[in-house]
Image (cartoon, rainbow, N blue to C red; front, side, top):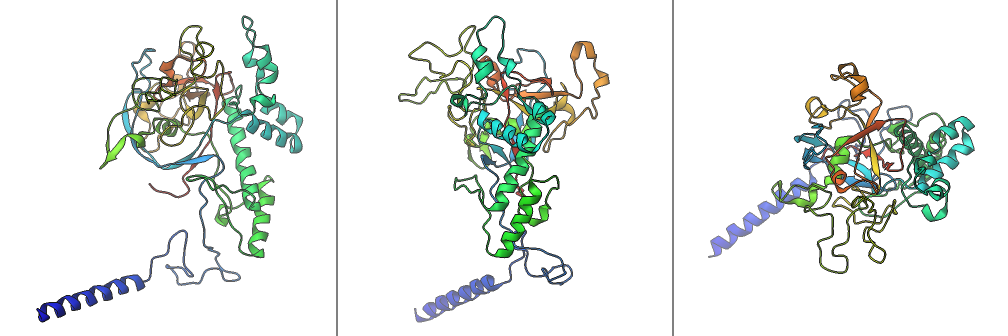
Length: 420
């Protein structure tokens, strides 16, 4: 018995020694904590005239962004192909982690952009950025008040901006990148929301000086160096694959060992567009769409899709990634050029179609197909669409310089070095 006790005690001592040795072992440097000298040359970093490699605390995206963990998913249409386009057949692709706006861009966000342009841009630039408010006009509908008030009247501040072309949406994203980085460099922007928000704390006057330099560069035509760690990557339109992946939010169907319980026709479970959960919200619509011919919202007193035209950007339940209105309210521009055969000839890793590569526009009859390198995809369905278009796999296209009252946008951003 005494011998056994001593053997156990010796084993515990050995285990403790091994544990301490493991803890004391030097850790490898990381991108966030690069160490004090180069592992390749042995030369110390951050000497007065040497290579500068500062410690880095990566911000969690930018304002309004939600982290979308990447992965494999089945991209493509799950609904019956009633349009007979056969342009989004099912295939397996992988999408790297990225950030996406929690909501569609609202009128107040776009007015902020227009105000900034008025302060430091020419009249020509401002005019080019103005949304087309006449998209609401219809000779057979009394939509006059939307034409004059929808964009600027305070009651519509948090309704999604519409009448914006694909080109204008891209211009907004470029401006937003500079505006956010300028504010970030001041240390004046911070949110505590889980999974989103960002801040960079300054520890010294030297850091403050560097931040001021970045802020000045961010508001000028010169882009600050990304090596500083004080700037975020570009805001941009999401790719079609990113948008569809984020909309389906299959993370909500996963239960164990990479298995998924079901596919999704919509950004929620089931084949219904009504809330199945018991309670006072049971039976209410989960998105803002056109329910049938002449029926945009239901009857007074039980107008349970809540809006005849658009609704505020947080109005309906978020999907499992925390994204609002990935079905309905307004369609959304994505980056991709439209081709009917994109499912055949794009990559299966982070797929995108930037132009006519491998599928030139000259292969199509321009008069019949309208296919060219200015056709851009939009997705998601809107207040003016029937439920069929709410399915993330459905896709349509429009010229990049065109705009409608049913198309808006949201932005995306790379996942800041995250490989998952």
